[in-house]
Image (tube, rainbow, N blue to C red; front, side, top):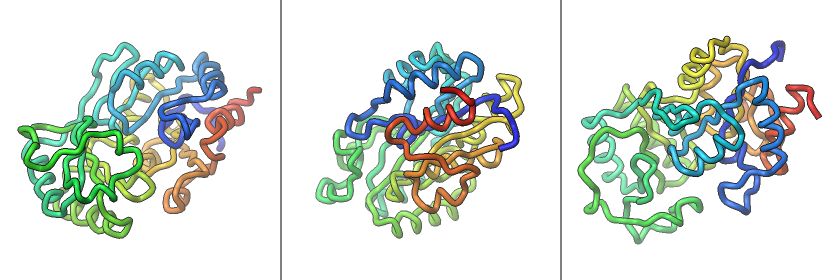
Length: 267
């Protein structure tokens, strides 16, 4: 890398959150180093997660000035003010949901706490989703605009085919395969981490080509089109690693801290 980073955008799951046996936990070393870097260079959370109490608490803890949630579906400042919202429009949401129902998929709308699908197919539920309540399609609420839909319930090959089907059917959405190849995140076409990262760079009045994105999943690749460097965690799937500008260590044992210390030349 031939520049001094002017900002860092960091994913949460599989990246910043580095205590895998303790859900939504971050090591003290990651916190210490991120806080130190944030004194001179902005470190911004860039996640597929919703704007939640946990995300805002972590934002305040690491002194992040902004937060990118739902892959850019919602962008907020440190005081939880919404700066930008990119939504899939209602008509498109209805068409997407119909396809997912026809494909007998599980899905979550707007990062809520309910999975819609068929109980008898629970074996396909991702480990992270087992804490959610599962309801049948008959219980779907009245649909409106959506900042994000995540769907799962097929093999990896099945997920790829479904992504291709959705991409062929809609030009106004963005699609990212996540959860080790078993899920698809569906957003508005303007809701990608790359576009959101660039939006924040403009707010900070910095050169986006001198900014770094750190992540491990399909929704992190879009940063390549807007930022100077994509640091991919070692724990990322092979098909994600091939896009890395820099291949970093595993997220475990303060992987993000190791990356920042190296790039910032700090102890």
